[in-house]
Image (cartoon, rainbow, N blue to C red; front, side, top):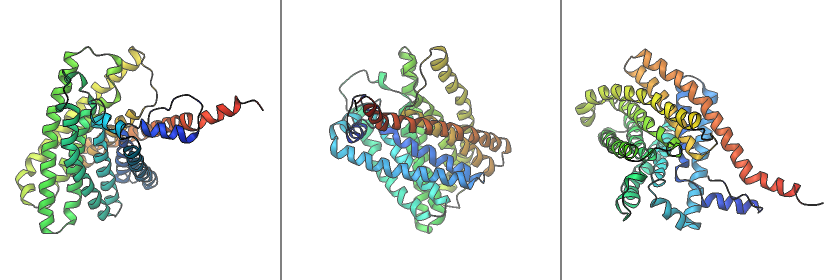
Length: 363
Protein backbone atom coordinates (compact mmCIF):
# COMPACT_ATOMS: atom_id res chain seq x y z
CA UNK A 1 0.00 0.00 0.00
CA UNK A 2 1.49 3.33 -0.96
CA UNK A 3 1.98 5.93 1.71
CA UNK A 4 -0.89 8.36 2.20
CA UNK A 5 -0.15 12.08 1.71
CA UNK A 6 1.53 13.63 4.75
CA UNK A 7 -1.30 16.07 5.53
CA UNK A 8 -3.62 16.32 8.52
CA UNK A 9 -6.81 14.37 8.08
CA UNK A 10 -8.98 11.70 9.56
CA UNK A 11 -7.97 8.08 9.84
CA UNK A 12 -10.77 7.20 7.43
CA UNK A 13 -9.40 9.59 4.83
CA UNK A 14 -5.95 8.06 5.09
CA UNK A 15 -7.35 4.53 4.84
CA UNK A 16 -9.32 5.56 1.75
CA UNK A 17 -6.17 6.98 0.19
CA UNK A 18 -4.31 3.77 0.98
CA UNK A 19 -7.01 1.71 -0.71
CA UNK A 20 -7.00 4.02 -3.72
CA UNK A 21 -3.26 3.59 -4.21
CA UNK A 22 -3.09 -0.09 -3.24
CA UNK A 23 -0.55 -1.89 -5.41
CA UNK A 24 -1.87 -4.89 -7.38
CA UNK A 25 1.05 -7.02 -6.25
CA UNK A 26 0.34 -6.98 -2.52
CA UNK A 27 -0.82 -10.61 -2.58
CA UNK A 28 2.91 -11.39 -2.58
CA UNK A 29 2.54 -11.10 1.21
CA UNK A 30 0.17 -14.07 1.10
CA UNK A 31 2.56 -15.93 -1.18
CA UNK A 32 5.59 -15.31 1.04
CA UNK A 33 3.92 -16.21 4.35
CA UNK A 34 2.26 -19.30 2.87
CA UNK A 35 5.37 -20.81 1.31
CA UNK A 36 7.58 -20.21 4.35
CA UNK A 37 4.84 -21.72 6.52
CA UNK A 38 4.93 -24.79 4.25
CA UNK A 39 8.69 -25.07 4.58
CA UNK A 40 8.55 -24.82 8.36
CA UNK A 41 5.92 -27.54 8.42
CA UNK A 42 8.25 -29.76 6.36
CA UNK A 43 11.00 -29.08 8.89
CA UNK A 44 8.88 -29.86 11.94
CA UNK A 45 8.41 -26.35 13.36
CA UNK A 46 4.63 -26.43 13.81
CA UNK A 47 4.18 -23.39 16.03
CA UNK A 48 5.84 -20.84 13.77
CA UNK A 49 4.38 -22.58 10.74
CA UNK A 50 0.86 -22.19 12.15
CA UNK A 51 1.49 -18.52 12.93
CA UNK A 52 2.58 -17.86 9.35
CA UNK A 53 -0.41 -19.80 8.06
CA UNK A 54 -2.61 -17.43 10.05
CA UNK A 55 -0.79 -14.46 8.48
CA UNK A 56 -1.24 -16.05 5.06
CA UNK A 57 -4.98 -16.64 5.47
CA UNK A 58 -5.69 -13.28 7.15
CA UNK A 59 -3.72 -11.31 4.57
CA UNK A 60 -5.56 -13.10 1.77
CA UNK A 61 -8.98 -12.24 3.18
CA UNK A 62 -8.02 -8.63 3.94
CA UNK A 63 -6.52 -8.08 0.50
CA UNK A 64 -9.53 -9.60 -1.27
CA UNK A 65 -11.79 -7.19 0.65
CA UNK A 66 -9.53 -4.19 0.01
CA UNK A 67 -9.31 -4.93 -3.70
CA UNK A 68 -13.08 -5.34 -3.93
CA UNK A 69 -13.57 -1.98 -2.20
CA UNK A 70 -11.02 -0.44 -4.54
CA UNK A 71 -12.82 -1.84 -7.58
CA UNK A 72 -16.15 -0.42 -6.40
CA UNK A 73 -14.93 2.97 -5.14
CA UNK A 74 -11.99 3.64 -7.45
CA UNK A 75 -12.64 1.80 -10.73
CA UNK A 76 -10.60 4.33 -12.70
CA UNK A 77 -7.53 3.62 -10.57
CA UNK A 78 -8.01 -0.10 -11.11
CA UNK A 79 -8.40 0.42 -14.85
CA UNK A 80 -5.23 2.52 -14.92
CA UNK A 81 -3.30 -0.31 -13.25
CA UNK A 82 -4.51 -2.79 -15.87
CA UNK A 83 -3.14 -0.55 -18.64
CA UNK A 84 0.21 0.09 -16.94
CA UNK A 85 2.77 -2.56 -17.95
CA UNK A 86 4.85 -1.67 -14.90
CA UNK A 87 2.05 -2.60 -12.46
CA UNK A 88 -0.50 -4.77 -14.27
CA UNK A 89 1.37 -8.07 -13.93
CA UNK A 90 1.10 -7.66 -10.18
CA UNK A 91 -2.52 -8.80 -10.49
CA UNK A 92 -1.16 -12.31 -11.05
CA UNK A 93 -0.09 -12.40 -7.40
CA UNK A 94 -3.77 -12.99 -6.59
CA UNK A 95 -3.64 -16.29 -8.48
CA UNK A 96 -0.37 -17.39 -6.92
CA UNK A 97 -1.48 -16.33 -3.45
CA UNK A 98 -4.72 -18.27 -3.84
CA UNK A 99 -2.88 -21.44 -4.82
CA UNK A 100 -0.14 -21.12 -2.20
CA UNK A 101 -2.78 -20.70 0.51
CA UNK A 102 -4.74 -23.64 -0.89
CA UNK A 103 -1.70 -25.94 -0.96
CA UNK A 104 -0.78 -24.97 2.60
CA UNK A 105 -4.32 -25.64 3.83
CA UNK A 106 -4.16 -29.02 2.11
CA UNK A 107 -1.04 -29.96 4.05
CA UNK A 108 -2.86 -28.88 7.22
CA UNK A 109 -5.63 -31.39 6.55
CA UNK A 110 -8.17 -29.37 4.58
CA UNK A 111 -8.00 -30.78 1.03
CA UNK A 112 -11.47 -29.42 0.29
CA UNK A 113 -10.13 -25.89 0.75
CA UNK A 114 -7.27 -26.72 -1.63
CA UNK A 115 -9.73 -27.86 -4.31
CA UNK A 116 -11.97 -24.82 -3.81
CA UNK A 117 -9.11 -22.34 -4.00
CA UNK A 118 -7.69 -24.17 -7.01
CA UNK A 119 -11.01 -23.62 -8.77
CA UNK A 120 -10.87 -19.90 -7.95
CA UNK A 121 -7.27 -19.70 -9.18
CA UNK A 122 -8.01 -21.51 -12.45
CA UNK A 123 -10.87 -19.15 -13.28
CA UNK A 124 -8.72 -16.12 -12.41
CA UNK A 125 -5.85 -17.55 -14.45
CA UNK A 126 -8.03 -18.02 -17.52
CA UNK A 127 -9.34 -14.46 -17.24
CA UNK A 128 -6.23 -12.55 -16.19
CA UNK A 129 -3.91 -14.69 -18.30
CA UNK A 130 -5.42 -13.15 -21.42
CA UNK A 131 -6.68 -9.83 -20.04
CA UNK A 132 -3.51 -8.49 -18.44
CA UNK A 133 -1.11 -9.04 -21.39
CA UNK A 134 -3.68 -7.46 -23.71
CA UNK A 135 -4.54 -4.38 -21.63
CA UNK A 136 -0.97 -3.76 -20.44
CA UNK A 137 1.03 -4.63 -23.55
CA UNK A 138 -0.64 -5.73 -26.77
CA UNK A 139 -3.63 -3.39 -26.72
CA UNK A 140 -1.64 -0.20 -26.18
CA UNK A 141 -0.93 2.27 -28.96
CA UNK A 142 2.17 3.58 -27.21
CA UNK A 143 5.46 2.37 -28.67
CA UNK A 144 8.04 1.16 -27.92
CA UNK A 145 6.67 -1.17 -25.26
CA UNK A 146 10.00 -2.81 -24.47
CA UNK A 147 10.98 0.03 -22.13
CA UNK A 148 8.25 -1.02 -19.69
CA UNK A 149 9.32 -4.68 -19.43
CA UNK A 150 10.46 -5.47 -15.89
CA UNK A 151 10.86 -8.27 -13.40
CA UNK A 152 7.22 -8.17 -12.30
CA UNK A 153 6.30 -9.79 -15.64
CA UNK A 154 7.69 -13.07 -14.26
CA UNK A 155 4.73 -13.18 -11.85
CA UNK A 156 2.71 -14.35 -14.87
CA UNK A 157 4.90 -17.47 -14.91
CA UNK A 158 4.63 -17.88 -11.13
CA UNK A 159 0.83 -17.74 -11.30
CA UNK A 160 0.78 -20.35 -14.06
CA UNK A 161 3.08 -22.70 -12.16
CA UNK A 162 1.00 -22.20 -9.02
CA UNK A 163 -1.98 -23.65 -10.91
CA UNK A 164 0.16 -26.66 -11.80
CA UNK A 165 1.20 -27.01 -8.15
CA UNK A 166 -2.38 -26.74 -6.92
CA UNK A 167 -3.64 -29.32 -9.42
CA UNK A 168 -0.81 -31.71 -8.55
CA UNK A 169 -1.66 -31.32 -4.85
CA UNK A 170 -5.34 -32.16 -5.36
CA UNK A 171 -4.86 -34.96 -7.93
CA UNK A 172 -3.89 -37.82 -5.56
CA UNK A 173 -7.05 -37.25 -3.50
CA UNK A 174 -9.51 -37.28 -6.40
CA UNK A 175 -11.36 -40.14 -8.09
CA UNK A 176 -10.14 -41.80 -11.33
CA UNK A 177 -11.82 -39.42 -13.78
CA UNK A 178 -11.00 -36.18 -11.93
CA UNK A 179 -7.45 -37.43 -11.44
CA UNK A 180 -6.90 -37.70 -15.18
CA UNK A 181 -8.26 -34.18 -15.69
CA UNK A 182 -6.20 -32.74 -12.84
CA UNK A 183 -3.05 -34.42 -14.15
CA UNK A 184 -3.73 -32.84 -17.52
CA UNK A 185 -4.17 -29.41 -15.94
CA UNK A 186 -0.99 -29.83 -13.89
CA UNK A 187 1.22 -30.87 -16.80
CA UNK A 188 -0.31 -28.34 -19.21
CA UNK A 189 0.05 -25.42 -16.77
CA UNK A 190 3.62 -26.48 -15.92
CA UNK A 191 4.49 -26.56 -19.62
CA UNK A 192 2.83 -23.22 -20.37
CA UNK A 193 4.59 -21.65 -17.40
CA UNK A 194 7.98 -22.66 -18.80
CA UNK A 195 7.20 -21.23 -22.22
CA UNK A 196 6.01 -17.99 -20.64
CA UNK A 197 9.22 -17.86 -18.59
CA UNK A 198 11.28 -18.07 -21.77
CA UNK A 199 9.21 -15.36 -23.47
CA UNK A 200 9.30 -13.01 -20.48
CA UNK A 201 13.01 -13.65 -20.03
CA UNK A 202 13.63 -12.52 -23.62
CA UNK A 203 11.61 -9.31 -23.18
CA UNK A 204 13.22 -8.39 -19.87
CA UNK A 205 16.73 -9.20 -21.13
CA UNK A 206 16.21 -7.07 -24.23
CA UNK A 207 14.98 -4.20 -22.08
CA UNK A 208 18.08 -4.41 -19.88
CA UNK A 209 20.34 -4.45 -22.93
CA UNK A 210 18.53 -1.81 -24.98
CA UNK A 211 18.13 0.83 -22.29
CA UNK A 212 20.50 2.31 -19.77
CA UNK A 213 20.14 0.65 -16.34
CA UNK A 214 19.61 3.09 -13.49
CA UNK A 215 19.59 2.18 -9.79
CA UNK A 216 15.83 2.84 -9.59
CA UNK A 217 15.29 0.34 -12.42
CA UNK A 218 16.58 -2.70 -10.50
CA UNK A 219 13.67 -2.88 -8.11
CA UNK A 220 12.88 -5.92 -5.94
CA UNK A 221 10.54 -7.35 -8.61
CA UNK A 222 13.51 -8.83 -10.48
CA UNK A 223 13.79 -11.49 -7.77
CA UNK A 224 10.66 -13.03 -9.25
CA UNK A 225 12.87 -14.47 -11.99
CA UNK A 226 14.31 -16.85 -9.39
CA UNK A 227 10.94 -17.42 -7.76
CA UNK A 228 9.42 -18.45 -11.09
CA UNK A 229 12.17 -21.01 -11.60
CA UNK A 230 11.87 -22.29 -8.04
CA UNK A 231 8.11 -22.84 -8.24
CA UNK A 232 8.69 -24.63 -11.55
CA UNK A 233 10.98 -26.98 -9.63
CA UNK A 234 8.43 -27.59 -6.88
CA UNK A 235 5.53 -28.08 -9.28
CA UNK A 236 7.63 -30.39 -11.45
CA UNK A 237 8.69 -32.49 -8.46
CA UNK A 238 5.08 -32.81 -7.35
CA UNK A 239 3.98 -33.85 -10.86
CA UNK A 240 6.77 -36.40 -11.19
CA UNK A 241 5.66 -37.99 -7.92
CA UNK A 242 1.98 -38.32 -8.87
CA UNK A 243 0.31 -41.73 -9.19
CA UNK A 244 -0.13 -43.19 -12.67
CA UNK A 245 -2.20 -41.07 -15.06
CA UNK A 246 -1.92 -40.86 -18.86
CA UNK A 247 -0.52 -37.30 -18.93
CA UNK A 248 1.87 -37.96 -16.06
CA UNK A 249 3.12 -41.25 -17.51
CA UNK A 250 3.86 -39.53 -20.83
CA UNK A 251 5.98 -36.81 -19.25
CA UNK A 252 7.28 -38.14 -15.92
CA UNK A 253 10.91 -38.60 -16.99
CA UNK A 254 11.03 -35.21 -18.74
CA UNK A 255 9.45 -33.38 -15.81
CA UNK A 256 11.66 -35.05 -13.20
CA UNK A 257 14.89 -34.39 -15.09
CA UNK A 258 13.91 -30.84 -15.97
CA UNK A 259 13.19 -30.05 -12.33
CA UNK A 260 16.83 -30.70 -11.43
CA UNK A 261 17.98 -28.50 -14.32
CA UNK A 262 15.66 -25.68 -13.26
CA UNK A 263 16.84 -25.91 -9.64
CA UNK A 264 20.40 -25.48 -10.91
CA UNK A 265 19.41 -22.40 -12.90
CA UNK A 266 17.54 -20.90 -9.92
CA UNK A 267 20.67 -21.45 -7.83
CA UNK A 268 22.77 -19.69 -10.47
CA UNK A 269 20.37 -16.72 -10.53
CA UNK A 270 20.60 -16.08 -6.78
CA UNK A 271 24.15 -14.58 -6.76
CA UNK A 272 23.28 -12.50 -9.83
CA UNK A 273 20.26 -10.97 -8.09
CA UNK A 274 22.19 -10.39 -4.87
CA UNK A 275 24.91 -8.62 -6.88
CA UNK A 276 22.26 -6.41 -8.49
CA UNK A 277 20.98 -5.49 -5.03
CA UNK A 278 24.54 -4.69 -3.89
CA UNK A 279 25.05 -2.51 -6.98
CA UNK A 280 21.84 -0.63 -6.30
CA UNK A 281 21.97 -0.14 -2.53
CA UNK A 282 25.68 -0.15 -1.70
CA UNK A 283 27.46 1.22 -4.75
CA UNK A 284 24.75 3.67 -5.81
CA UNK A 285 23.42 4.21 -2.28
CA UNK A 286 19.76 3.82 -3.16
CA UNK A 287 17.91 3.87 0.18
CA UNK A 288 16.56 0.56 1.42
CA UNK A 289 13.12 1.26 2.86
CA UNK A 290 9.92 -0.73 3.10
CA UNK A 291 7.85 -1.02 -0.05
CA UNK A 292 5.23 -3.55 -1.06
CA UNK A 293 7.61 -4.92 -3.69
CA UNK A 294 9.85 -6.36 -0.96
CA UNK A 295 7.36 -9.21 -0.50
CA UNK A 296 8.18 -10.35 -3.98
CA UNK A 297 11.78 -10.81 -2.74
CA UNK A 298 10.73 -12.87 0.28
CA UNK A 299 8.57 -15.23 -1.76
CA UNK A 300 11.41 -16.37 -4.07
CA UNK A 301 13.65 -16.97 -1.06
CA UNK A 302 10.98 -19.13 0.57
CA UNK A 303 10.03 -20.90 -2.64
CA UNK A 304 13.67 -21.69 -3.45
CA UNK A 305 14.05 -23.19 0.03
CA UNK A 306 10.89 -25.31 -0.14
CA UNK A 307 11.64 -26.44 -3.70
CA UNK A 308 15.11 -27.59 -2.63
CA UNK A 309 13.80 -29.43 0.43
CA UNK A 310 11.08 -31.21 -1.52
CA UNK A 311 13.25 -32.01 -4.56
CA UNK A 312 16.01 -33.32 -2.32
CA UNK A 313 13.62 -35.63 -0.51
CA UNK A 314 11.82 -36.92 -3.62
CA UNK A 315 14.92 -37.46 -5.78
CA UNK A 316 17.19 -38.47 -2.90
CA UNK A 317 19.53 -35.50 -3.29
CA UNK A 318 20.64 -34.75 0.28
CA UNK A 319 22.86 -31.81 -0.69
CA UNK A 320 19.96 -30.11 -2.50
CA UNK A 321 17.75 -30.68 0.55
CA UNK A 322 20.46 -29.25 2.85
CA UNK A 323 20.75 -26.12 0.71
CA UNK A 324 16.98 -25.78 0.86
CA UNK A 325 17.00 -26.02 4.67
CA UNK A 326 19.69 -23.35 4.92
CA UNK A 327 17.66 -21.17 2.57
CA UNK A 328 14.58 -21.57 4.75
CA UNK A 329 16.39 -20.17 7.78
CA UNK A 330 17.51 -17.24 5.67
CA UNK A 331 13.99 -16.63 4.35
CA UNK A 332 12.36 -16.65 7.81
CA UNK A 333 14.31 -13.72 9.35
CA UNK A 334 13.98 -11.85 6.04
CA UNK A 335 10.21 -12.34 6.30
CA UNK A 336 10.15 -11.13 9.91
CA UNK A 337 12.22 -8.04 9.07
CA UNK A 338 9.96 -7.17 6.15
CA UNK A 339 6.85 -7.76 8.26
CA UNK A 340 8.24 -5.41 10.90
CA UNK A 341 8.91 -2.83 8.19
CA UNK A 342 5.36 -3.17 6.90
CA UNK A 343 3.94 -2.79 10.41
CA UNK A 344 5.95 0.37 11.00
CA UNK A 345 4.96 1.71 7.57
CA UNK A 346 1.26 1.21 8.28
CA UNK A 347 1.61 2.71 11.74
CA UNK A 348 3.50 5.77 10.51
CA UNK A 349 1.17 6.46 7.59
CA UNK A 350 -2.21 5.59 9.11
CA UNK A 351 -1.96 6.06 12.89
CA UNK A 352 0.96 8.30 13.80
CA UNK A 353 -0.20 11.40 11.88
CA UNK A 354 -3.12 11.66 14.35
CA UNK A 355 -0.63 11.63 17.25
CA UNK A 356 1.41 14.35 15.57
CA UNK A 357 -1.68 16.44 14.95
CA UNK A 358 -2.73 16.20 18.61
CA UNK A 359 0.75 17.16 19.77
CA UNK A 360 0.73 20.21 17.49
CA UNK A 361 -2.72 21.35 18.61
CA UNK A 362 -2.68 23.97 21.43
CA UNK A 363 -4.39 22.98 24.67
